[in-house]
Image (tube, rainbow, N blue to C red; front, top):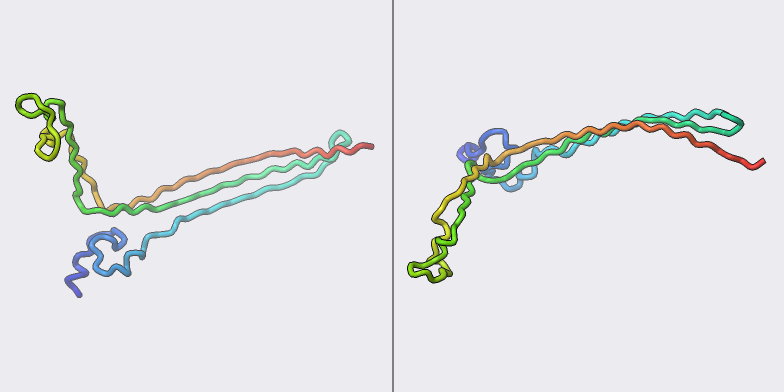
Length: 137
């Protein structure tokens, strides 16, 4: 049992090389949403008309988490072939597995997996409204 636990490396929420599949759902935090509101109304007769003036604020704070699976030092290779790579000696068009598609490496992308990230967003708003009640006299 001690050998299996030695595979667990670092703060990756227990996902990398986890020997027990029942533990895969643990420790990834749920998204957090906080909302705050405040508003008020003021009733007043202005110019002989009934006015209701409203104002308020609202704020929203959200935090979400992302966990990317993969192998440490995972690499992706990209190749760019030229039209000359697709020709056989003699000038005939090459088709199939004997072609020279992967002879010119262009770039390598190395991924730092597994990793996790969190993102936070914050919104705030203010409103002002005047409702005038008209009545036929």
